[in-house]
Length: 108
Image (cartoon, rainbow, N blue to C red):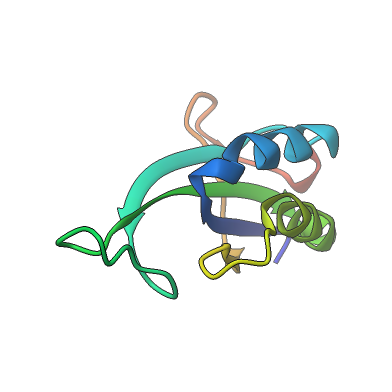
């Protein structure tokens, strides 16, 4: 596998800090989805227990995974319940819709 998808579920309060750290380590693109949910931390003061969070997704070359994961953990870590989770998954193929072609490893 040449590409990996890193997905981080983080506190909304850490989103700007995570965005800045990814920019500093020269990550060329990312996606952010703002959502609600609960897991390790739940908001018991609402009837559905949901907490606002952000899901940040980044596609990187395999050799950049550790650098990106470490940067996100440093930026999002507060030491509190609900700081979030990071998952790393293989990407079998990646295609550019504009060019209708398979993305090569040196393009990311």
